[in-house]
Image 1 (cartoon, rainbow, N blue to C red):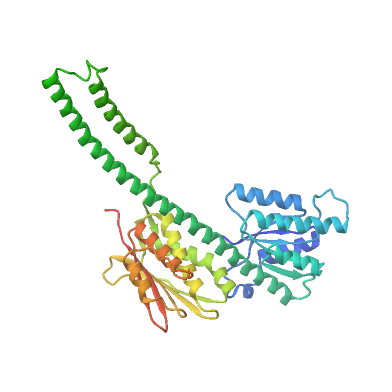
Image 2 (image 1 turned 135 degrees about the vertical axis):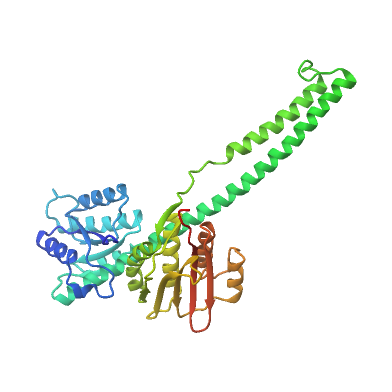
Amino acid sequence: MQDRPRLVIIEDSEPQRARLSMLLRTPPSDWSDGAGAMGFAVDEATSAEQARQRLDQAFRDKRPYDVILLDMQLPATERDAEDDKAFEEAGRKLLTDIRASCDTAVVVLTGFPSPQNFIHAVREGAADFLAKPLASREDEKMLFTRLVIAVGRTREAVHRKLRLQRLLWLKDHDRRSDHERFAKLVSEAMGRISDELHGLAETLSRRYGLDPNRDAEDPVCRHVAAVEEMGNDLARTICKSIEQEEPARFEKVDVAATMTEQIARARPCYLHRGVRLEWTPSEAELQTKTFPEDLRLMVAELILGTLELAASESTVQLSSQRSEDGRDIVISATRSGKRVPKEVQKLLREGRWVRTQGNSDWQGLSFLQRIANNIGARLDIKSSDERTVVSLRIPIIGDG
């Protein structure tokens, strides 16, 4: 089961912090409709200093927060005197530091919604700005919904970063592959050169009585040895420059479980964009052997890449099932909105990287194609004026 979104409440008032923590941990069941969350995993901080400690610890544990709820009026440390100006400065500086150091969305909740605080929050990239007090149940529900939407903003940012990191890895992998092929060619060439040099040494021995080992100081023998050493140095340099990487793990995975996990992570992103997400899970077992990390990234890219091109207020339909011949697992995303041009579909079928000048709409599909190729899957696209269906066909590989 997907973990609940992680939230840290930065609030110095004990009663307000306790109320918010209880409410956001266990919200009324009807609040979760369409929000894709059954409450938050909540941490608390009472000062800017303690908040930084919480954030640093989350980073070290590799479990960063999905959203931060920040009171702009809070002390720099728990020992600070009650100086309203100092409180305001500490909150503003904390917001600036958070936005400069991580992708986590920040929702500002303050009892001092001054124009200066609002301008600072917008300038520093706060995801939302709300005023206290939360006077009614509807106000509290609005806060919960805004926090879930902010989770979507964080997860989109994190996915974009993962996409970039994986793309850089793929490009580096291509470079290393090219390098390895070049090294192989050099090695083969050096083998031929070495054979020729040995033939030359035999000719020198027969005609002139020169032995490259015995007559190493002879100018001709010295040149022969120098050419051979230059070639060997070149081959060693090329081989040394090829970085050895740990091979990816090829394991049995449950594709349906991966879908469930990634859909749970993506629902706040859909709420953030105002798009409805519908999923039709398969009743059949969907298991195969593949590279788990690439599979997770590929499914996330399909779900979020489809979201990026979906029209606001539209619906994206997801499905996962076995193919008719039982050889593949087929994951499909259907959306309305902008169709995929035929020339883009052609380039994708040919496995060519799409770089449309001034238009990055199809970069996500190109990236999806690269990841699919990396795990032996196939990308299919059917696009018309009414709808576009993007499908991934993942081969079923058993234990045999």
